[in-house]
Image (cartoon, rainbow, N blue to C red; front, side, top):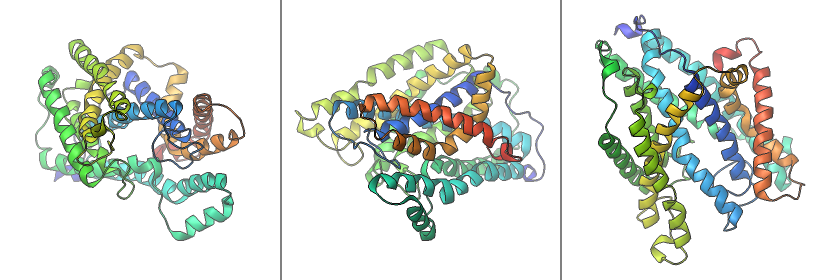
Length: 384
């Protein structure tokens, strides 16, 4: 297999300011997502100052988290898939695999053995457990804590699949007219969304939302897999840089129509017994609604965000370039920073909907500064 011995000649996709800005923005949204869980949204995190309950603040934050979850990590997988074929052709399979192991594997190990235990030990101090004693107990137990670096773990798996596919198909060079290959029709996109919803429902019969398998919530992986594969397929015809306006309009409209369905079903749960059941998985009406709701919302938001950011950020300012450059490092280091910020603000008697944006903003600012320092370490840029 010549891809294992030498790289092919095709160049990688050029840098795209809009996509860089979008990826950086989604990274900051991850920080606010986890801040919302800290202050009452439903979800797993290292520290919960307030539990998820039926209060108005908790319901609003949970809706914010549910909308994010529908699309933002899937968008990361779409972009990862999009840049994979070019990297494989430029580097060859062996070098690509080695680089992925360094860029994804090293942060995963660093978080699992160090930053994850630190984040958990910090969170446990709110329950009266001494930080160093808790940290020592976690580390001595040998427990590996993936935390948000489950994403790197998943990309390692998807990357291995991409290498195998590339090796099986690399003799076929990209066609000269791929730029003219038509963008998928609305019918194709709809079928993909419905298929993803069905697959998500089936997966959640065994792995309901919130259930992990080695750090991976497999109940979400129908969408993640579909979007990574879609990104890979979109690379040669460069679909992500030429989303038709008509397609954006149709799918954004559909997403906006679908958005209130989930909160409406939740509100009706008190009056309709069939809706007063878990949406996380199983043979329940809320689970049937939630599974296709996610991809229908995701497709619309993603197909709107891609052209919007590329129009707005054709060129990046110095600040945006720095943010894009530091995005991955910010993602890696944010858990202990956010937990520390939340613990520092714990004595403040402020409403959850006030603490949430303050903690999220402070975490973004601190992580931006710390990521800049981290990238000054010799060799760090090869990893993050």
